[in-house]
Length: 151
Image (cartoon, rainbow, N blue to C red; front, top):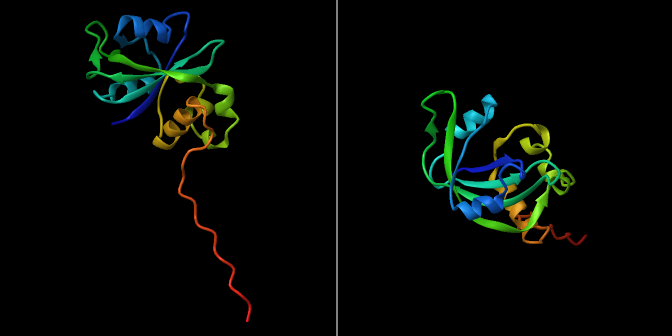
């Protein structure tokens, strides 16, 4: 299972509309790298729904429900079927993401115009933790060494 982030202008299609619709096809993507990512989606992949524009926040979670569908009129274009899973308890803003050095190398920070991007599992967990209102993600930390008594 892969993890993704898809961006959408909330004035065009907000997460609330996806919940009302119950399902949709994610289409209208023109960027070649974003299209490449869409083509690799498979049923069961999880997707963060990100509102662009003034909001700039991760607001929900979706699930890919089937393989990408190639446009009959333009084989370069694809659409991915999705369904909503849940709205995040607290939207995770781009400002909070940029403020955390853990996210510094993520495409969301480095390639702000990319509309479809992978989410590494550790970043997915961090966004989920922020959405839940917790700031820490359980990490395996090396245990502190005990000082040896001097002889």
